[in-house]
Length: 188
Image (cartoon, rainbow, N blue to C red):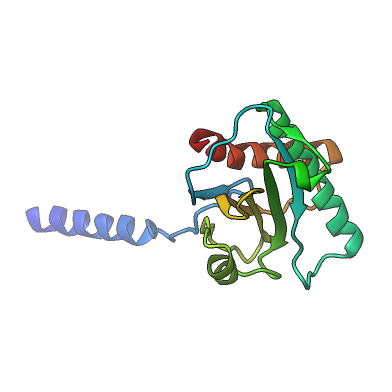
């Protein structure tokens, strides 16, 4: 009788074990994921009221159309100016009278690799690529107008949101710029 009960328990256990096969799933990708990194190069600070000028930098060859590039750069330029103004700095179109210049660039990973960013810019947030989403980078730096030296560099990487409403796109860009620039303000 004990042998029959043991055999029945063994058979039931074997049935449960074979029915409970676990298939590992890939972790869900968060399309809103954002990786940010920055570095302070030299200890120069700027007081509130200091003037700055924008100096956009463009990738030589891009998979985007010229009109798309212009729209994206305008969104980021507006967000940078707004963010710096809200922290007491003043935008000027006169680079000669600026205390500092703000250089920035935007590129998809297909146009500007992490290795190139690391080699030429020296700061890479390291967001992993994803086959289903287009990874993009936003690079920004503060250059002292008097010395011509880079004071601070920051970079953000996230996934491109191609099919969102214009108002949502503006909010997303403002959030990205604000989060990266926050690291500059902390060290200024």
